[in-house]
Every structure is written in structure tokens, then in C-alpha cells.
Image 1 (cartoon, rainbow, N blue to C red):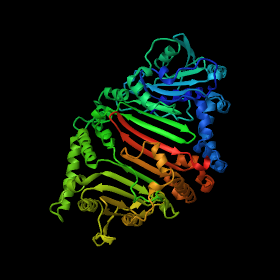
Image 2: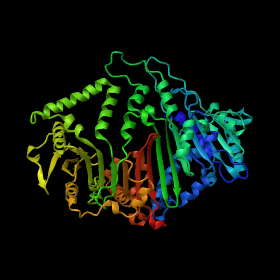
Image 3: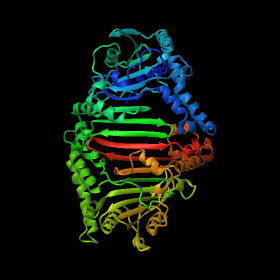
Image 4: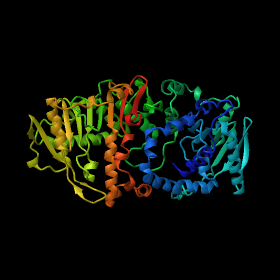
Length: 629
């Protein structure tokens, strides 16, 4: 994305903050009834007043505003003011603080096709709608002040009317918001004249209490038509959106968003294929149409999300509209079978993270091969050559070895992962908590043989350490992994992967104690995760555990781990190098409080997914911490 694309959006967003409140006028229509029919994607808050009320009592905002967080909070906000607010105020000649208490009503941000075909010279449209409700007079005053300031700065403002509604047109330059978006040096290709960057424009107008702002006449004209009783197609007339609205946006979400896959992919596939490059190159030529078709993303009709904040918790729903009959590639892999994805009894209650996916391994492997072949037949040939090399290597010890059968052919339809809290407080221990992976396999011995063969090809193995050791009737195998170098400290760390077969699964972990605990769980002495207080109730809020995907996180404990990790990293200056320099300027983890002072804001979170004939859905629910009730 170029800064040219963002400048009108940025200016529109700030102008938008000069609005909001409660109104005695007729209610402004909802977003879908105002947005143009060529809307590519949009995000909307139907009622900012309600959002503000809910935000004040949300655990996240209460945590951020807690007195214990003040030193950390103030450092971050000071940097935000320095890098963002102050330059913005300088460019616009206004004080942001004067408008912070104004927002209420509808806030909608949309991207439209705007006649674009995916080329840089025709940018997508950007549209902002904001209902000031009862403070329309304040909106009018603030817009007039901005117009006066821009005119005094020598801007050649003009007025254009659409359906009787007068829009002020503000020319933008590459220097606008240079303090926030530094201007990039133009890229010039040899033998070609550099493209002349067209100056952008911002169109804005006020209709009753509504601010309309966009980056082109094509973007704002349909909105003007909808507001003044004119005839123009709206997003609400789109059958695909109407279906998603009925299924996904009912029950008054706090905010939601929608994306038109059909329109975006049509834009991408209509872009002309590149005629440049070496015609004799053996590398495959990639086009958007080819990539979308091969990966199956071209069959994605739409995507949406909706978040609902309530006193009992926060619920997020994500939906991909992809009809079963046309699914392929990635979407076919993600369409999990409706099978039990709950935590088995051997998963211990002290697990801080758990996830289970009923992914069909053999089907996923078949689809992956199709995608590789579709992108490049040579790519599939190369993959097969690597597999054949592994077969030759493995057949030196086992003449009947076949990697396809031993590994891919044995994959089942169950993948389980769970993690416990770290065993110590060192940076290494905090960043690598004990984790166990379980993969359902049909023939564990063949799968183990395949893993050892592949590992030996990648990293030399010590034959004296290859022999499995016995543990409670099971064999624990070990392979050495490639040494890793810590970018922050420069230290080199060696590690091993341990694995064993039990209960129809191949269990893998880099922590021997974690693996042994799983093998020991058959004695039935483990308190299961399923008995955790609040888990069953939370699971019902995401549709249960029978859709083929389920996950759980003990956020209270994972945040405890994060606090320790970040505070320890701040004490070890070398470890801070793991973060980008710009990030280190904004935060000082040494200012974080003792975790006990803020742990009351964290509890648990669950997610679940399922697929049906219409598409794929994932739900996330975070119950309100009981300590805050």
C-alpha cells in the first residue's frame, strides 16, 4: 500500500472525529443502505455511543486504564502523541483533544472498486460515513474552521454538487502528513519514464448530522443519491451481502465488517498478465487468476466478522462464504468434518492452552499436491524427487521403505496440541513452555521410521543416541534437531525432539517430562481439562465441541507468562533486540506492574469452528472474569 492511498483516508478519518452525539433529526440510514453497490469491503460501528459505554466496562479497557498500568500507559501515550497526534495537529492546525469527546452514532469505513482494475494508477475508493447526531452544529462549525484554515494555506478549494448536496473538494499533496507517512523515493525502471504521481483529492460534505468523506466523486455520488432520495444501487441490494447480513449480522453486533471476495478476485484476475521478464526463463509465470484458482481462494464468495460485547463476555464470529460444491485447495482443507474436538481425558487440567483439529491428513496431502502441481508442474516433480531421494536413503536400511506410505499414507484425522506453564523463569524457559503434539496415525511404527529417515537426511544423528528407551511399556525415540542461534544473545542452543506411540497417536515433544506425563496418563490419575470451571459453559457459547475444531486458553496464566517474559526481557538488554527498534521506542516493559495487581482482568477464552454447505464459521468467546462481576 502506498502513502498516496492512505492520505485521503487519514484526512477523512480525522475530519470524522469532528462529529458524533445524539440527534432529534430523523435517523440516518444504516451503512448497507448508504454504501455504493461496488463496495469491496467495509467496517462499521452502528452506534458509537453504545460502544463507548461497553468499552468503559470491558476487561481490556479496565486493564489498560488501571492505576497499576499508568507508568507503562503514559510512556506509550506520550510516544503516540509525539509520532502521531502532534504531527496531525500541526498539519491540520487543530487540537485533537478538543474533539475526543464528540464521537457517537454510526462510524463506517469502506473501500470500493471505484473503477479500479488492480492498477496503481486507479486506486480503490475510500469512503467514510460518520453520524454526529445531536452535535451536527458542532460538526458544521468544525468543518467551516478547517475550510478556512485550508484556504488560508493556499489550497485551491472548490465545490461540486451531487444530487443537490454540495461537496467541498480539497486537493492533497505528497507533503500531507509527511510526519506520519514519510514520502518514499519514486522507483524508476531503466529505459522508462517515471510515472507522474497524480495528486489526490478529498471530497466531503455534511447532510443533516452525517459527514460523508471520500477520495473521489465516484465514491461519494451514490451516497448523496441515497441520502436525497435518488435512485442508485446500494450494497443492501447485493444478494450475497443480504444473505450474509441475515445469517451473520443479526442480534445487533457491536461492530462488524464484510468483504466481497467475488469483486476483489474479479479485479485481480482481470489485471493483465505481465509481459516483462525473460521469455527463456524456466521459472513458472504466476498470475493472480492462476494463484486464486489453484489455491481455491477464487471460490470464496465473501468473508465477514461480527463482534458482540455484553456484560457476560465478548463474542466474535468469523465466516467464510464458500459453497461446498465449489470448495478446493485451502478452503477444502479447512472444511473440517463434524467430529468431536473436545479435550480427551488425558489432557491435564493445568494445561494453559489446548487445541484440537479433526483435519483429514491424507486429504490435506492430496489437496496440497494438487495446489503445487497447479502452480507449477515442475514444483510437484521437484517434491517427488525429494521424496524419491528419501526413499533411496531409507531403503539402504529397509528395502521396503516408502515415505509416501509410511508418513503421508498413515495420517489420520486428529491433531491435538496442549501446553503447560513454563517450569522456570529464565528467558529460555519462558519462551519455550512444555508443549505436546499428538497426531493420529494408522501405523505408528511406519510413521516413526519415516520421521527418523527424514531427520537423518536433514541433520546428522548420533547413532549411540538413536536407540529408543523403554518407559512404561512404550518406546521413546529421540532425534537431534539443528542447533539454533539466539539473535539477541548470539548463543547457540542444541535441542532434541522426543516421540512415542500410544493410544492411536504419535506424541511429539521437545520436553521429555511432558511426553512421559502423557504416557503415564493411562493410569487415570490425571485431572482432566474438561472439568475446568467455566469451560463447558463457555463452549456452549461457540456452538459446542462437535464441529471438528475446538480450542481453549487460560488467559490468566498465559498473561502471567507474558508479563514474566517481557519484564525479564527488559532486564536483559540483549534480549530486547528480539523486538524491532521502532517497537522498543514505544514501550518499556520494565514499567509493567506486578502481575498480581492486574490478573483480575483475565480469565479464559475458547474457540470453535465448523463447516456446512454454505461455508466455514469460527466463533471465539471470552467470558467476563468472575472477579469483575
